[in-house]
Image 1 (cartoon, rainbow, N blue to C red):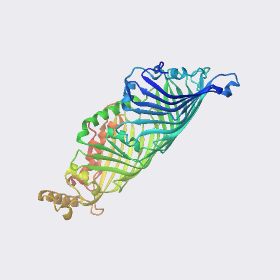
Image 2: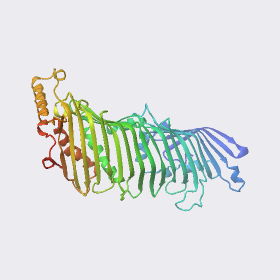
Image 3: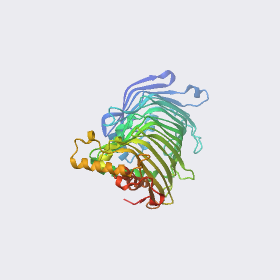
Image 4: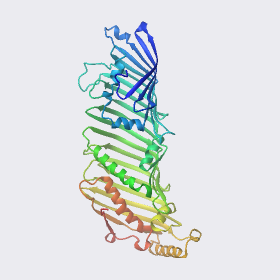
Amino acid sequence: MNSKLKGYTVRIGRVHPHLWRAAFDLNDLVVKQDSHPETSVADFGALKFSLMLRELLRFKVVGDLTLVRPALHLNLTQIREEAQSHMGLKERGWQSAVESIFPFKLNQVKVQDGSLLYLSDRTASKPIQLTRVFMTARNVRNLAAAKRTYPSPITMEGMLFDTGRVWFKGEADFLREPYVAAHGDIRLQQVPLDRLSPLAQEYQLKTTGGFLSLQGSMEYTPEGQTAHLSDVELEGLRLDYVTSGATKAVEKQHAQQAVKLAEKVRNAPKLRLDIDVLRLKNSQFGFENRRTTPSYRVFMSHLNLDLEHLSNHQGAQHSDFHARGDLMGSGTTTLKGRIRSTARPADFAVSLEVEDAKLVDLNGMLMAHAGVDVADGLFSLYTEIAVKNGQVEGYVKPLIKNLRISDRQKDVAKPFRQRMKLHGMQFLANLFKNHSTHAVATVAHISGSTGGPKTSEWEVIRKLIGNGIFQAILPGFLSPSKTVAAPAPETHPRLALKPD
């Protein structure tokens, strides 16, 4: 076996022959990477070789291999070593190593209680692992298989991240060149996502809880990979994007990498991903800003989202979405619209309504960006924006109800000048509010170019938030002197979507 392998070494603890049925077992088998021999990359309770007696009755001499408790251990160092090597898995000689010790061709392979474990410093407390794997592959030596057919039935089930379940049922072509091809149905059930939190932290993402379930079909071949998922569901996920001064440079780097990856996947000829329905249930998404003083967090709780007809390939069909949640736990929020994610230039339309969010819950953001906080009030926002053919059109209408900026108990420790500023803002808010509704409102129109035919939808959304929506919202409750009550259409301010 070792004479056939390149870069790896096998050690066998014991050989147990069964001469009467032309079989033998290799017990306590260990595989180590030559460049990093301190830890094993694989351990096997046993490799059991035997003749398939049923096939002998049909005058076929083929063998059966059962892998008992195979455990693969992968760490980042070993993976990098393999990735930097110019030698593929086939050239490593794994198949030749197995065939060299058994004189008959293998036609059936079974896995009993297998496991796959990924180890790193970040995942030590919550390892990423697939356990309790049971798999059966039959007819693996069908040399008469026609090209692009799958002669070998295969079934697999296991436990993903300790409690999640995974199933695969399909067919494979183990003799396809340059590597194995397979297709079939796949299903995941209640896979816990907390195991991915250490990896997410590298991208300023803080995750807690969450479960993933999905079902669909997939095909993996040397010519290309496709996946058609009929239903994908994320439940109970809490995710925050955390930004800080210390991570500013790496955030820019990650953003550039994300853009490159998105462009690589978009309309990729050898990769196709289609999702009929993507659901997000009872989740919470937030943005935590540690660059400002004070730091603050804005979040959407009780979030439910339905996204239909998602694909990485361009087509005539739009992806429709509808979401509902609570801004800062209090403001009922509805988001709906459509997007053609593969379109160039960007093509989407969105409608957003936020009703009666408590302003005191936004005090962290107000203090960070305007140096003021409020004592009471409700914030609502209504906006509709459409982007098509390189142009954006829409409006933003923020509405403030029962605004109370100054409060003796809240402001008692503040400097005299700041207290006077708050009293002045309170006076202006009272002056310009609609006294029948006790609301301060403004409407801003947004229009302009999206920045070019290659601008992505994410770039457009970023510019809208930075140069359009935020500019329209802030005057509503930070500078009451610039607001008007119930403005006429011709007096609406117009905000251009300017590049950064």
